[in-house]
Image (cartoon, rainbow over all chains, first blue to last red):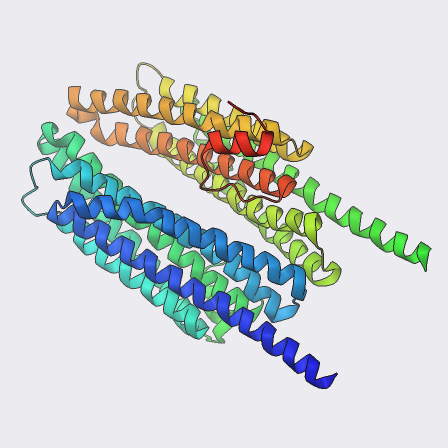
Length: 238
Length: 238
Protein backbone atom coordinates (compact mmCIF):
# COMPACT_ATOMS: atom_id res chain seq x y z
CA UNK A 1 0.00 0.00 0.00
CA UNK A 2 2.80 2.33 0.96
CA UNK A 3 4.49 1.58 -2.33
CA UNK A 4 1.28 2.18 -4.22
CA UNK A 5 0.93 5.55 -2.55
CA UNK A 6 4.47 6.53 -3.42
CA UNK A 7 3.78 5.48 -6.96
CA UNK A 8 0.62 7.60 -7.18
CA UNK A 9 2.23 10.66 -5.69
CA UNK A 10 5.29 10.23 -7.89
CA UNK A 11 2.98 10.04 -10.89
CA UNK A 12 1.15 13.11 -9.57
CA UNK A 13 4.41 15.03 -9.15
CA UNK A 14 5.31 14.13 -12.71
CA UNK A 15 1.99 15.54 -13.89
CA UNK A 16 2.54 18.79 -12.01
CA UNK A 17 6.06 18.97 -13.41
CA UNK A 18 4.64 18.37 -16.86
CA UNK A 19 2.18 21.28 -16.79
CA UNK A 20 4.92 23.54 -15.43
CA UNK A 21 7.27 22.66 -18.25
CA UNK A 22 4.49 23.05 -20.81
CA UNK A 23 3.87 26.58 -19.54
CA UNK A 24 7.54 27.36 -20.09
CA UNK A 25 7.37 25.84 -23.55
CA UNK A 26 4.32 27.97 -24.37
CA UNK A 27 6.16 30.99 -22.93
CA UNK A 28 9.12 30.27 -25.19
CA UNK A 29 6.91 30.18 -28.25
CA UNK A 30 5.23 33.44 -27.24
CA UNK A 31 8.63 35.12 -26.72
CA UNK A 32 9.62 34.05 -30.21
CA UNK A 33 6.35 35.43 -31.60
CA UNK A 34 7.05 38.86 -30.09
CA UNK A 35 10.63 38.86 -31.34
CA UNK A 36 9.64 37.95 -34.89
CA UNK A 37 6.69 40.36 -34.96
CA UNK A 38 8.99 43.24 -34.06
CA UNK A 39 11.59 42.08 -36.58
CA UNK A 40 8.89 41.90 -39.26
CA UNK A 41 7.89 45.47 -38.48
CA UNK A 42 11.40 46.87 -38.46
CA UNK A 43 12.57 45.06 -41.59
CA UNK A 44 9.25 45.44 -43.41
CA UNK A 45 9.29 41.67 -43.81
CA UNK A 46 5.77 40.68 -44.90
CA UNK A 47 6.54 36.96 -45.06
CA UNK A 48 7.81 36.92 -41.47
CA UNK A 49 4.77 38.93 -40.35
CA UNK A 50 2.47 36.40 -41.96
CA UNK A 51 4.35 33.54 -40.35
CA UNK A 52 3.74 35.10 -36.91
CA UNK A 53 0.03 35.51 -37.70
CA UNK A 54 -0.19 31.87 -38.71
CA UNK A 55 1.71 30.61 -35.67
CA UNK A 56 -0.77 32.22 -33.31
CA UNK A 57 -3.07 29.21 -33.70
CA UNK A 58 -0.27 27.10 -32.22
CA UNK A 59 -0.19 29.34 -29.14
CA UNK A 60 -3.96 29.03 -28.86
CA UNK A 61 -3.82 25.26 -29.12
CA UNK A 62 -1.22 25.09 -26.37
CA UNK A 63 -3.49 27.09 -24.08
CA UNK A 64 -6.44 24.75 -24.67
CA UNK A 65 -4.30 21.63 -24.13
CA UNK A 66 -2.71 22.83 -20.89
CA UNK A 67 -6.08 24.07 -19.66
CA UNK A 68 -7.60 20.63 -20.22
CA UNK A 69 -4.71 18.95 -18.47
CA UNK A 70 -5.17 21.25 -15.46
CA UNK A 71 -8.85 20.37 -15.29
CA UNK A 72 -8.02 16.68 -15.42
CA UNK A 73 -5.52 17.05 -12.62
CA UNK A 74 -8.04 18.86 -10.41
CA UNK A 75 -10.70 16.24 -11.11
CA UNK A 76 -8.48 13.19 -10.73
CA UNK A 77 -5.96 14.26 -8.09
CA UNK A 78 -8.03 16.67 -6.03
CA UNK A 79 -4.96 18.69 -5.20
CA UNK A 80 -4.80 20.77 -2.04
CA UNK A 81 -2.71 23.65 -0.70
CA UNK A 82 0.36 24.42 -2.78
CA UNK A 83 -0.43 21.79 -5.42
CA UNK A 84 -3.82 23.38 -5.99
CA UNK A 85 -2.25 26.83 -6.07
CA UNK A 86 0.17 25.62 -8.74
CA UNK A 87 -2.67 24.36 -10.93
CA UNK A 88 -4.71 27.55 -10.50
CA UNK A 89 -1.60 29.68 -11.17
CA UNK A 90 -0.98 27.71 -14.36
CA UNK A 91 -4.59 28.18 -15.52
CA UNK A 92 -4.21 31.93 -15.05
CA UNK A 93 -0.69 32.18 -16.49
CA UNK A 94 -1.64 30.51 -19.76
CA UNK A 95 -4.54 32.95 -20.18
CA UNK A 96 -2.05 35.81 -20.00
CA UNK A 97 0.40 34.04 -22.32
CA UNK A 98 -2.38 33.51 -24.84
CA UNK A 99 -3.25 37.20 -24.72
CA UNK A 100 0.42 38.11 -25.12
CA UNK A 101 0.34 35.92 -28.21
CA UNK A 102 -2.66 37.93 -29.46
CA UNK A 103 -0.73 41.17 -28.97
CA UNK A 104 2.24 39.75 -30.91
CA UNK A 105 -0.17 38.81 -33.68
CA UNK A 106 -1.51 42.38 -33.72
CA UNK A 107 2.02 43.74 -34.09
CA UNK A 108 2.59 41.30 -36.95
CA UNK A 109 -0.57 42.60 -38.65
CA UNK A 110 0.72 46.18 -38.31
CA UNK A 111 4.01 44.99 -39.78
CA UNK A 112 2.24 43.56 -42.83
CA UNK A 113 0.15 46.69 -43.22
CA UNK A 114 3.12 49.02 -42.86
CA UNK A 115 5.51 47.04 -45.07
CA UNK A 116 4.18 48.74 -48.21
CA UNK A 117 4.48 52.25 -46.74
CA UNK A 118 7.48 54.49 -46.66
CA UNK A 119 9.78 53.62 -43.74
CA UNK A 120 10.12 56.27 -41.06
CA UNK A 121 13.57 57.91 -40.80
CA UNK A 122 14.25 56.54 -37.34
CA UNK A 123 13.17 53.03 -38.45
CA UNK A 124 10.70 52.58 -35.58
CA UNK A 125 13.29 53.39 -32.92
CA UNK A 126 10.51 53.73 -30.29
CA UNK A 127 9.20 50.26 -31.03
CA UNK A 128 12.70 48.77 -31.05
CA UNK A 129 13.51 50.26 -27.65
CA UNK A 130 10.17 49.46 -26.04
CA UNK A 131 10.15 46.00 -27.61
CA UNK A 132 13.57 45.24 -26.14
CA UNK A 133 12.44 46.14 -22.63
CA UNK A 134 9.19 44.21 -22.88
CA UNK A 135 10.80 41.05 -24.23
CA UNK A 136 13.34 41.20 -21.42
CA UNK A 137 10.55 41.58 -18.90
CA UNK A 138 8.57 38.60 -20.17
CA UNK A 139 11.71 36.48 -20.27
CA UNK A 140 12.50 37.33 -16.65
CA UNK A 141 8.89 36.64 -15.63
CA UNK A 142 9.07 33.17 -17.19
CA UNK A 143 12.44 32.63 -15.52
CA UNK A 144 10.96 33.54 -12.15
CA UNK A 145 8.13 31.09 -12.87
CA UNK A 146 10.61 28.33 -13.73
CA UNK A 147 12.56 28.84 -10.51
CA UNK A 148 9.53 29.90 -8.40
CA UNK A 149 11.68 32.84 -7.36
CA UNK A 150 9.50 35.47 -5.70
CA UNK A 151 12.28 38.01 -5.25
CA UNK A 152 12.79 37.92 -9.01
CA UNK A 153 9.01 38.11 -9.52
CA UNK A 154 8.77 41.30 -7.45
CA UNK A 155 11.75 42.74 -9.34
CA UNK A 156 10.08 42.05 -12.69
CA UNK A 157 6.77 43.54 -11.52
CA UNK A 158 8.70 46.67 -10.64
CA UNK A 159 10.05 46.79 -14.21
CA UNK A 160 6.53 47.45 -15.44
CA UNK A 161 6.66 50.98 -14.04
CA UNK A 162 9.72 51.69 -16.19
CA UNK A 163 7.99 50.26 -19.24
CA UNK A 164 4.98 52.50 -18.68
CA UNK A 165 7.33 55.50 -18.55
CA UNK A 166 9.07 54.46 -21.77
CA UNK A 167 5.66 53.97 -23.35
CA UNK A 168 4.51 57.44 -22.30
CA UNK A 169 7.70 58.93 -23.75
CA UNK A 170 7.28 57.08 -27.04
CA UNK A 171 3.65 58.16 -27.21
CA UNK A 172 4.53 61.83 -26.75
CA UNK A 173 7.12 61.53 -29.50
CA UNK A 174 4.68 59.86 -31.89
CA UNK A 175 1.96 62.46 -31.25
CA UNK A 176 4.48 65.18 -32.01
CA UNK A 177 5.20 63.55 -35.39
CA UNK A 178 1.50 63.57 -36.22
CA UNK A 179 1.13 67.21 -35.30
CA UNK A 180 4.17 68.24 -37.30
CA UNK A 181 3.01 66.40 -40.40
CA UNK A 182 -0.69 65.47 -40.42
CA UNK A 183 -0.18 63.43 -43.60
CA UNK A 184 1.56 60.84 -41.43
CA UNK A 185 -1.42 60.40 -39.07
CA UNK A 186 -2.62 57.04 -40.40
CA UNK A 187 0.88 55.59 -40.50
CA UNK A 188 1.86 56.88 -37.07
CA UNK A 189 -1.37 55.54 -35.60
CA UNK A 190 -0.29 52.07 -36.65
CA UNK A 191 2.99 52.59 -34.81
CA UNK A 192 0.96 53.75 -31.80
CA UNK A 193 -1.07 50.53 -31.88
CA UNK A 194 2.15 48.53 -31.92
CA UNK A 195 3.45 50.50 -28.92
CA UNK A 196 0.16 49.90 -27.08
CA UNK A 197 0.41 46.18 -27.78
CA UNK A 198 3.90 46.14 -26.25
CA UNK A 199 2.72 48.05 -23.21
CA UNK A 200 -0.02 45.46 -22.70
CA UNK A 201 2.53 42.65 -22.94
CA UNK A 202 4.28 44.35 -20.04
CA UNK A 203 1.02 44.30 -18.06
CA UNK A 204 0.47 40.62 -18.77
CA UNK A 205 4.05 39.80 -17.71
CA UNK A 206 3.31 41.66 -14.51
CA UNK A 207 0.21 39.51 -13.96
CA UNK A 208 2.32 36.38 -14.32
CA UNK A 209 4.65 37.63 -11.59
CA UNK A 210 1.67 38.14 -9.28
CA UNK A 211 0.58 34.54 -9.85
CA UNK A 212 4.08 33.37 -8.92
CA UNK A 213 3.91 35.23 -5.61
CA UNK A 214 0.43 33.82 -4.98
CA UNK A 215 1.68 30.36 -5.81
CA UNK A 216 4.71 30.48 -3.54
CA UNK A 217 3.31 32.52 -0.68
CA UNK A 218 -0.38 31.64 -0.90
CA UNK A 219 -1.12 35.33 -0.95
CA UNK A 220 -3.14 37.21 -3.50
CA UNK A 221 -1.14 40.31 -4.30
CA UNK A 222 -3.14 41.71 -7.17
CA UNK A 223 -4.27 45.21 -6.40
CA UNK A 224 -1.58 45.61 -3.76
CA UNK A 225 1.12 48.26 -4.10
CA UNK A 226 4.64 47.08 -4.84
CA UNK A 227 5.93 48.73 -1.67
CA UNK A 228 3.46 46.74 0.40
CA UNK A 229 4.30 43.51 -1.41
CA UNK A 230 7.99 44.01 -0.82
CA UNK A 231 7.40 44.74 2.84
CA UNK A 232 5.00 41.87 3.48
CA UNK A 233 6.39 39.20 1.22
CA UNK A 234 10.07 39.77 1.30
CA UNK A 235 10.22 41.16 4.82
CA UNK A 236 12.05 44.24 3.59
CA UNK A 237 11.43 47.00 6.10
CA UNK A 238 12.12 50.61 5.37
CA UNK B 1 -25.38 8.85 7.07
CA UNK B 2 -27.71 9.40 4.17
CA UNK B 3 -29.02 12.54 5.88
CA UNK B 4 -25.50 13.75 6.54
CA UNK B 5 -24.65 13.34 2.89
CA UNK B 6 -27.73 15.25 1.83
CA UNK B 7 -26.79 17.95 4.25
CA UNK B 8 -23.27 18.22 2.90
CA UNK B 9 -24.36 18.29 -0.70
CA UNK B 10 -27.07 20.82 0.10
CA UNK B 11 -24.45 22.97 1.76
CA UNK B 12 -22.19 22.46 -1.25
CA UNK B 13 -24.99 23.46 -3.65
CA UNK B 14 -25.52 26.58 -1.58
CA UNK B 15 -21.83 27.42 -1.91
CA UNK B 16 -21.93 26.99 -5.67
CA UNK B 17 -25.08 29.10 -5.83
CA UNK B 18 -23.31 31.70 -3.72
CA UNK B 19 -20.30 32.13 -6.04
CA UNK B 20 -22.65 32.31 -9.02
CA UNK B 21 -24.71 35.08 -7.47
CA UNK B 22 -21.56 36.91 -6.40
CA UNK B 23 -20.36 36.87 -10.03
CA UNK B 24 -23.65 38.47 -11.07
CA UNK B 25 -23.29 41.03 -8.30
CA UNK B 26 -19.77 41.85 -9.47
CA UNK B 27 -21.09 42.02 -13.04
CA UNK B 28 -23.78 44.48 -11.94
CA UNK B 29 -21.21 46.74 -10.35
CA UNK B 30 -19.03 46.60 -13.46
CA UNK B 31 -22.02 47.47 -15.68
CA UNK B 32 -22.69 50.48 -13.48
CA UNK B 33 -19.04 51.51 -13.71
CA UNK B 34 -19.19 51.53 -17.53
CA UNK B 35 -22.47 53.45 -17.56
CA UNK B 36 -21.18 56.12 -15.20
CA UNK B 37 -17.80 56.40 -16.94
CA UNK B 38 -19.53 57.12 -20.25
CA UNK B 39 -21.90 59.56 -18.56
CA UNK B 40 -18.95 61.35 -16.96
CA UNK B 41 -17.32 61.68 -20.38
CA UNK B 42 -20.42 62.94 -22.16
CA UNK B 43 -21.47 65.39 -19.46
CA UNK B 44 -17.93 66.47 -18.62
CA UNK B 45 -18.71 65.48 -15.03
CA UNK B 46 -15.37 65.34 -13.21
CA UNK B 47 -16.89 64.32 -9.86
CA UNK B 48 -18.64 61.33 -11.41
CA UNK B 49 -15.46 60.35 -13.24
CA UNK B 50 -13.54 60.42 -9.98
CA UNK B 51 -16.21 58.33 -8.29
CA UNK B 52 -15.79 55.65 -10.95
CA UNK B 53 -12.01 55.68 -10.50
CA UNK B 54 -12.45 55.27 -6.74
CA UNK B 55 -15.00 52.46 -7.06
CA UNK B 56 -12.61 50.34 -9.09
CA UNK B 57 -10.99 49.13 -5.86
CA UNK B 58 -14.37 47.66 -4.95
CA UNK B 59 -14.41 45.67 -8.20
CA UNK B 60 -10.88 44.47 -7.46
CA UNK B 61 -11.81 43.40 -3.95
CA UNK B 62 -14.77 41.42 -5.25
CA UNK B 63 -12.47 39.56 -7.63
CA UNK B 64 -10.07 38.61 -4.86
CA UNK B 65 -12.88 37.48 -2.53
CA UNK B 66 -14.65 35.32 -5.13
CA UNK B 67 -11.31 33.89 -6.23
CA UNK B 68 -10.51 32.84 -2.66
CA UNK B 69 -13.94 31.30 -2.26
CA UNK B 70 -13.41 29.28 -5.44
CA UNK B 71 -10.09 28.00 -4.16
CA UNK B 72 -11.70 26.98 -0.88
CA UNK B 73 -14.44 25.14 -2.70
CA UNK B 74 -11.94 23.21 -4.82
CA UNK B 75 -9.85 22.34 -1.76
CA UNK B 76 -12.74 21.39 0.55
CA UNK B 77 -15.32 19.95 -1.83
CA UNK B 78 -13.11 18.45 -4.49
CA UNK B 79 -15.72 19.11 -7.15
CA UNK B 80 -15.88 16.99 -10.29
CA UNK B 81 -17.46 17.25 -13.74
CA UNK B 82 -19.96 20.11 -14.10
CA UNK B 83 -19.36 21.41 -10.54
CA UNK B 84 -15.66 21.73 -11.28
CA UNK B 85 -16.40 23.38 -14.61
CA UNK B 86 -18.59 25.91 -12.82
CA UNK B 87 -15.80 26.81 -10.41
CA UNK B 88 -13.21 27.12 -13.19
CA UNK B 89 -15.65 29.16 -15.31
CA UNK B 90 -16.20 31.50 -12.35
CA UNK B 91 -12.44 31.91 -11.81
CA UNK B 92 -12.06 32.92 -15.46
CA UNK B 93 -15.19 35.07 -15.65
CA UNK B 94 -14.16 37.25 -12.72
CA UNK B 95 -10.75 37.85 -14.34
CA UNK B 96 -12.57 39.25 -17.38
CA UNK B 97 -14.97 41.27 -15.22
CA UNK B 98 -12.06 42.77 -13.34
CA UNK B 99 -10.41 43.78 -16.62
CA UNK B 100 -13.70 45.27 -17.85
CA UNK B 101 -13.64 47.28 -14.62
CA UNK B 102 -10.13 48.47 -15.52
CA UNK B 103 -11.34 49.60 -18.94
CA UNK B 104 -14.24 51.52 -17.32
CA UNK B 105 -11.71 53.16 -15.03
CA UNK B 106 -9.63 54.18 -18.07
CA UNK B 107 -12.69 55.78 -19.68
CA UNK B 108 -13.34 57.64 -16.42
CA UNK B 109 -9.76 58.93 -16.49
CA UNK B 110 -10.27 60.19 -20.07
CA UNK B 111 -13.50 61.85 -18.85
CA UNK B 112 -11.65 63.70 -16.11
CA UNK B 113 -8.88 64.70 -18.51
CA UNK B 114 -11.30 65.88 -21.20
CA UNK B 115 -13.70 67.71 -18.87
CA UNK B 116 -11.59 70.87 -18.98
CA UNK B 117 -11.33 70.84 -22.79
CA UNK B 118 -13.75 72.22 -25.29
CA UNK B 119 -16.61 69.79 -25.96
CA UNK B 120 -16.75 68.36 -29.49
CA UNK B 121 -19.74 69.47 -31.58
CA UNK B 122 -21.23 65.98 -31.79
CA UNK B 123 -20.78 65.49 -28.01
CA UNK B 124 -18.93 62.20 -28.37
CA UNK B 125 -21.65 60.63 -30.51
CA UNK B 126 -19.26 57.76 -31.46
CA UNK B 127 -18.66 56.89 -27.82
CA UNK B 128 -22.35 57.15 -26.95
CA UNK B 129 -23.31 54.78 -29.76
CA UNK B 130 -20.49 52.28 -29.20
CA UNK B 131 -21.00 52.47 -25.43
CA UNK B 132 -24.67 51.62 -25.81
CA UNK B 133 -23.91 48.51 -27.84
CA UNK B 134 -21.15 47.33 -25.53
CA UNK B 135 -23.20 47.77 -22.34
CA UNK B 136 -26.03 45.86 -23.93
CA UNK B 137 -23.65 43.08 -24.88
CA UNK B 138 -22.18 42.74 -21.39
CA UNK B 139 -25.65 42.77 -19.88
CA UNK B 140 -26.77 39.95 -22.18
CA UNK B 141 -23.60 37.97 -21.43
CA UNK B 142 -24.30 38.20 -17.69
CA UNK B 143 -27.90 37.23 -18.34
CA UNK B 144 -26.76 34.17 -20.28
CA UNK B 145 -24.47 33.34 -17.36
CA UNK B 146 -27.33 33.67 -14.86
CA UNK B 147 -29.60 31.36 -16.86
CA UNK B 148 -26.77 29.17 -18.21
CA UNK B 149 -28.34 29.74 -21.61
CA UNK B 150 -25.92 28.68 -24.33
CA UNK B 151 -28.09 29.79 -27.23
CA UNK B 152 -28.05 33.28 -25.74
CA UNK B 153 -24.29 32.97 -25.18
CA UNK B 154 -23.67 32.18 -28.85
CA UNK B 155 -25.94 35.07 -29.86
CA UNK B 156 -23.98 37.49 -27.67
CA UNK B 157 -20.64 36.23 -28.99
CA UNK B 158 -21.96 36.96 -32.48
CA UNK B 159 -22.72 40.56 -31.38
CA UNK B 160 -18.98 41.12 -30.98
CA UNK B 161 -18.55 41.13 -34.76
CA UNK B 162 -21.02 44.02 -34.99
CA UNK B 163 -19.22 45.90 -32.26
CA UNK B 164 -15.94 45.54 -34.09
CA UNK B 165 -17.56 47.00 -37.21
CA UNK B 166 -18.98 49.94 -35.24
CA UNK B 167 -15.57 50.45 -33.70
CA UNK B 168 -13.86 50.49 -37.11
CA UNK B 169 -16.40 53.04 -38.34
CA UNK B 170 -15.90 55.28 -35.30
CA UNK B 171 -12.15 55.03 -35.71
CA UNK B 172 -12.25 56.11 -39.36
CA UNK B 173 -14.42 59.07 -38.37
CA UNK B 174 -12.07 60.10 -35.58
CA UNK B 175 -8.99 59.85 -37.79
CA UNK B 176 -10.72 62.08 -40.34
CA UNK B 177 -11.25 64.73 -37.63
CA UNK B 178 -7.56 64.68 -36.78
CA UNK B 179 -6.55 65.05 -40.40
CA UNK B 180 -8.96 67.89 -41.01
CA UNK B 181 -7.80 69.81 -37.95
CA UNK B 182 -4.43 68.70 -36.56
CA UNK B 183 -4.89 70.96 -33.53
CA UNK B 184 -7.45 68.44 -32.27
CA UNK B 185 -5.02 65.49 -32.38
CA UNK B 186 -4.40 65.24 -28.63
CA UNK B 187 -8.06 65.57 -27.77
CA UNK B 188 -9.24 63.14 -30.44
CA UNK B 189 -6.62 60.62 -29.32
CA UNK B 190 -8.26 60.57 -25.91
CA UNK B 191 -11.58 59.79 -27.57
CA UNK B 192 -9.82 57.03 -29.51
CA UNK B 193 -8.55 55.51 -26.25
CA UNK B 194 -12.08 55.53 -24.88
CA UNK B 195 -13.36 53.79 -28.04
CA UNK B 196 -10.59 51.20 -27.73
CA UNK B 197 -11.54 50.55 -24.11
CA UNK B 198 -15.14 49.92 -25.19
CA UNK B 199 -14.04 47.57 -27.93
CA UNK B 200 -12.02 45.58 -25.39
CA UNK B 201 -15.06 45.36 -23.11
CA UNK B 202 -16.81 43.71 -26.05
CA UNK B 203 -13.96 41.19 -26.30
CA UNK B 204 -14.13 40.39 -22.58
CA UNK B 205 -17.92 39.92 -22.78
CA UNK B 206 -17.28 37.50 -25.61
CA UNK B 207 -14.82 35.57 -23.43
CA UNK B 208 -17.51 35.24 -20.74
CA UNK B 209 -19.87 33.72 -23.30
CA UNK B 210 -17.24 31.16 -24.21
CA UNK B 211 -16.87 30.16 -20.56
CA UNK B 212 -20.66 29.67 -20.38
CA UNK B 213 -20.57 27.28 -23.33
CA UNK B 214 -17.62 25.44 -21.79
CA UNK B 215 -19.46 25.26 -18.49
CA UNK B 216 -22.68 23.90 -19.94
CA UNK B 217 -21.30 21.71 -22.68
CA UNK B 218 -17.93 20.79 -21.25
CA UNK B 219 -16.37 21.99 -24.48
CA UNK B 220 -13.65 24.54 -24.89
CA UNK B 221 -14.80 26.78 -27.71
CA UNK B 222 -12.14 29.45 -27.56
CA UNK B 223 -10.38 29.75 -30.88
CA UNK B 224 -13.28 28.06 -32.67
CA UNK B 225 -15.24 29.90 -35.34
CA UNK B 226 -18.79 30.92 -34.50
CA UNK B 227 -20.14 28.91 -37.42
CA UNK B 228 -18.50 25.79 -36.08
CA UNK B 229 -19.75 26.47 -32.55
CA UNK B 230 -23.30 26.90 -33.75
CA UNK B 231 -23.11 23.72 -35.75
CA UNK B 232 -21.52 21.59 -33.05
CA UNK B 233 -23.10 22.99 -29.93
CA UNK B 234 -26.55 23.96 -31.04
CA UNK B 235 -26.88 21.27 -33.67
CA UNK B 236 -27.79 23.82 -36.32
CA UNK B 237 -26.94 22.33 -39.67
CA UNK B 238 -26.58 24.34 -42.79
